[in-house]
Amino acid sequence: MLASITALISGLIFGLGLLLSGMGNPAKVQSFLDFSGLWDPSLALVMGGAIAVGLIAFTWAKTRSNALLGNAMQLPTSQSVDRRLITGSAMFGVGWGLAGFCPGPALMNLATLQPEVWLFVAAMLVGMLAQHIWSAQTVVCSPR
Image (cartoon, rainbow, N blue to C red):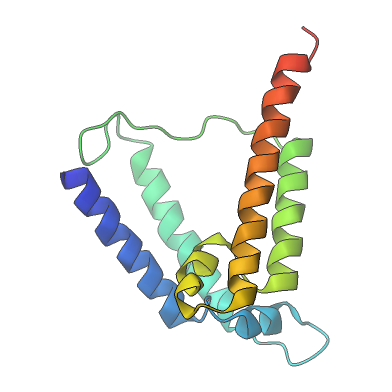
C-alpha cells in the first residue's frame, strides 16, 4: 500500500512539474526546437534541472542495495550505445519534434480531450506494441 501511495504522490509531483514548466504545451516544446524562428530556450532550464536532480539521485542510488521502500535496487547495467538505442532515441526525438509531446505530457494532456492528443497517444501505444512484438520475434529468430 505504501508503494502505491508513494507512486501516486511521485506521479502527481511529476505532473505538476510538467504543467509548471510548460512541457505539456506542444507549442512551447516546438518553439524550443525551432532554432531558426522564435527560439524559446526556457525548456533547456527544465532539462538542466531534471539532469541535475537525476544525477544526484542516481549517484546516491548507486551506493544503496535497497530502495527506500525496501525493495532491491534495480539500476540499469548496460553502458553500450547500440543501434537499438540510437534508433529509439531518434524516433523519440522525431515524434517529440513533430507532435510537441513526449509520453508523460501526452498522457497528462488526455484530460484536455483534444483529438490530436488522443491520436498521438494511440499512435504511441501502437508503436510500443509493435516494438514489443518485433523485439520478441528478434529474440526468437536470432541465430545463436
